[in-house]
Image 1 (cartoon, rainbow, N blue to C red):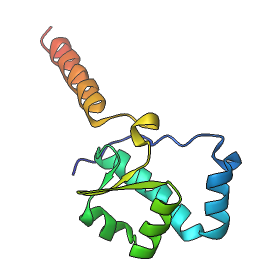
Image 2 (cartoon, one colour):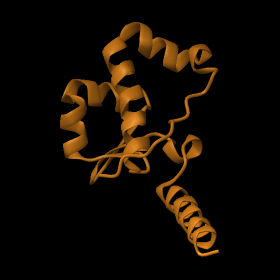
Image 3 (tube, rainbow, N blue to C red):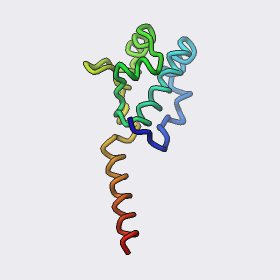
Image 4 (tube, rainbow, N blue to C red):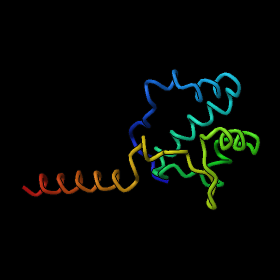
Length: 113
């Protein structure tokens, strides 16, 4: 896993979204784990995928996973679960790696002068 310095994006309007507010009110643990899952995916460049190891590491129980799927926060996939609409809000692995490569190339040019 590659740890990335940076931040995951969470909308400033999250507190006003009825679906999210309902989850936070009725299932606060599921809400907190969903936010941690977003941070995990951003940090590890998974494009929103939570594989079995990530699920264990984050402490996502079957009950919590079921709740998050049922309420539209996660999508079940053959490889595990994916944060719903992750790439609609977060930077993709491909974009992060391309940006890093451009920065490395820029530094190589500067150092070679």
